[in-house]
Image (cartoon, rainbow, N blue to C red; front, side):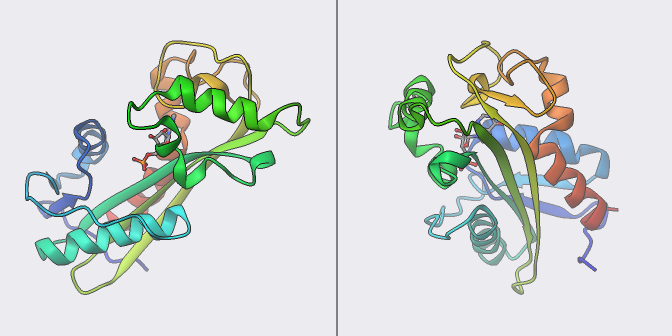
Length: 199
Ligand code: IMP
């Protein structure tokens, strides 16, 4: 059984992205845990050298937990395309280049897919709660669907406009954000984390 965080504990969010920190703090708010970001504590960001999402989440969580001597939560996520062997996957952010241009990243997915008949794709989100003594609890949320072209919708971010979840017709870029947030890969990973580790 995973070690649990009691109400009132301090939790380091091992991310330097203010948007992510806000979203995670909101999801955790009902559990009365005090979130502080790795950036505010001045913690270094370790290089993401693991071969998978879980491994990268684990190395980020442990680096922050050890440096802060407090439990830390990290995430790692990405967009994966079956016919591309799971790419862009771990490189999802990097495919957008230094300008973080996701229309460029989506065009690259489209170009590499060519006329492949297999359009299966998924979003994955790994979460890791790490402790200063090296204990970790990891969770993986996945949403299966299809890569579509051309991209549709102005909502969301990243690869949202080219992904239609299984059983739906709208892309994540067209969908009401509340609906996406209730059912997404991130929501699925968080539901597991909250049930296992939070009072
Ligand atoms: P990281 O988790 O900060 O390493 O970034 C993962 C990258 O995956 C993001 O920059 C996005 O490109 C992509 N990604 C992860 N989750 C989503 C999502 O919900 N919608 C669209 N793109 C996503």
